[in-house]
Amino acid sequence: MADNSKLQTHLEIKQQCAPMASTFSTEMMADELLKDDRVPFPFFRPLSQKRANTWIISLFVILHLGAFTVTMIVNDCWENSHGDCALKPLRRFSFQPLSENPLLGPSASTLEEIGALQKTLLTNNQQLWRIFTSPWLHAGLFHLIINLSSVIFVGLHLEQEFGSFRIGVIYILSAITGSLVASLFVQDRPSVCSSGALVGLLGTLLSGLIRNWKSYTNKFSGLVATMTILMTNLVLGLIPYINNFANIGGFMSGFLLGFVLLFKPQQEKLARNKGGLFEFDAKDIVKCRKSLDKPVQRVAALVIFAFLLAGIIMAVLHGIDINKYCSWCHYFDCIPSKWWSCTDKPFHCEKLVYSEHLTLSCPNTGRFRVFPFANISEARFQDICNLICS
Image (cartoon, rainbow, N blue to C red):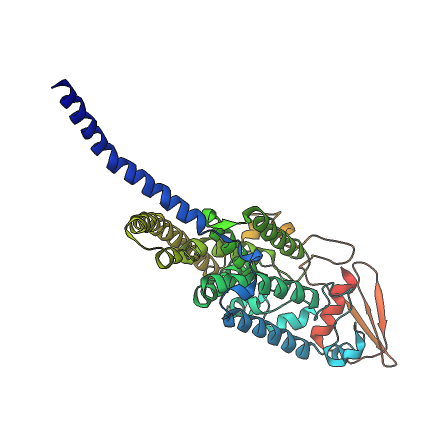
């Protein structure tokens, strides 16, 4: 009897432990599946190994190049500045001198004409359409090269990883949000917001990394690369004509939308590559984790983004100027240097025409310049006056 009792007790314990062992081994298998499904961080995966459809980023790059070409046609330094240009062999497409535009680009009056943000035009004249044009403009050739190179590098990987539609939505919303935030800090000098969309993609990349931390390898190298591109664009934004507050708005937008729209990369391969009863149980655990992990996070990020965007829009429509409440904020947008000025106050110059020569003098500084021509537009006159007096 004693032996039978011991045997029965042993069988009961074994039966009770069997489901526990099965569940434990299944969970371990799920962890192994998740571990085996890890993929390299987007920067470190060759584009040739992923889908070839990158039409949305390509379209954005073409639009930026087209907008810059139109800007330089309107600028026409060879005609409007009477040949006082950089890279003169380009004739109409030559640039303003580096002393006028350190980014090798158009004049301030051209940026103003083509649709850049400016306080007087945005608030006093209610030209709100500039919120939608400034994200497509670049301050100069250096800005264009750095910005589009980063967009291509980051955008192509993201588009091939997560799809054209989602990356396109993030790009557009980041650009508009960045321009809206810039409108709250805008000063009375033209500024462009094209870097806001790029920084939005960087924010998306960071949120995707946080969201799918266990799915990626090369995480720390990818994080270093992301922060390097981000800091490069923020430093570039300290030069005149580039609005750094657009970068802040774009980053916030991209970071939040990344949690809303980016799904775990290549997780579907678990269901395709595994089979059998044991693997089926493991896949159920993976699906359960996926369903519990994503919706709450997405909804929370979407709600925060919606309230943030609504608040910014209301502030812009009411003409709120945050510079009135933050006396030091303008230093984040532009740092004065011996190579450029950050002042946003229009200067007054005296004009003297004698024997087809034009002399402009600044009463505030006592400086003057003599030009071998007399015919000059009012907008160009103000450009030169600001350059002399600043």
